[in-house]
Length: 444
Ligand code: 5AD
Ligand code: SF4
Image (cartoon, rainbow, N blue to C red; front, side):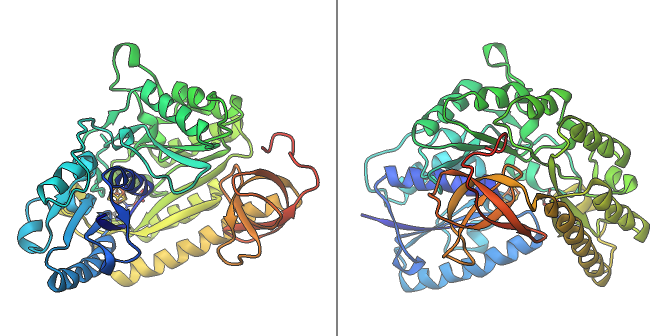
């Protein structure tokens, strides 16, 4: 039995593609090796969103080079976004790499391995476009990712994703629903719909397949056994009234939207080509909260975009306060090759200013999120149990519908939905104990 070792970098889309790689390799007769040194196939699923992602991967690739020197018959395979961005140069710059494939080619992994003659069992042919159609080895028994589209048609000036993941293409709704039904039969209770721009879903579908994102959400929510539906990541420009209405009307659809703002400054948003300005973003937030007052909102924010002044940055700080985010991912701008900003806008915010801004932003996010999460103290929240807490294995851990992690005193079984009385909060987590009432009203 050949053995593989897989390292995954980057976003949930990559984590999900890795589940597909595991499923595919399993069906080819591969087993997972505990370390790279034990593997016949060293596989990486890479990210290239920021320079720091490339650097982290380079360190790992260096170890693969060492192993290849010691054991020349080991196969080194590099998939994902970095591989796509380096398509031309990878085999010359890194001659010890045997196989490279982009994020849209997970399905070709079997064929590429066959060429290296290390395939264990027969041939695996698959000609679909969506890695979602491949066999999958899920990370969690009760939770599943479901790929609903690939690629992205946005032109955000800082972002390399459209260049590496290509044009947007939606998976036909019947295939998505079939997959969710199979998952539900297999014990899945929570699904997260995945797409690079998840809520522009369906615009390229024709004929009987024609479905919008709101209808897809409702259809997924109605699959028997599915109790929670999430999705990530939407683009604010594509959150329409029908999607907000589904959040209000369909009980399985959770009270959380990850709503990447990127900046609070209208001027910077324009240079980023986000197609909304600050007032329009705030209007969207108001409409969401009007329909679902307790909606948790999280976001992505970038500091140090080319030309960002102190005033622009203050606008980002005040956006955090004004929206009242339950959490945020914060990034320092990193120029990417081939992007509009990377090629033509320079990188003129000095490193020390970037680092002051990111610290100030992290403080603001923490203060705001701490204030927001405190509202849950004293409530009974429905928690989907994920397993023992990472920080204290004597306690259990799970997430609320608002997508907040709760560490609590058990007993509780993995995969169960339990009512937890919230007794404490920080800026990122809640703590509590199992409530006597098993199911709080509306909080399942
Ligand atoms: N520099 C910094 N952050 C970036 N992001 C995307 N591209 C860049 C870049 N060039 C951030 C955005 C996006 C998140 C996934 O990564 O905030 O939403
Ligand atoms: Fe990284 Fe973006 Fe690719 Fe995800 S889509 S792996 S974040 S470059």
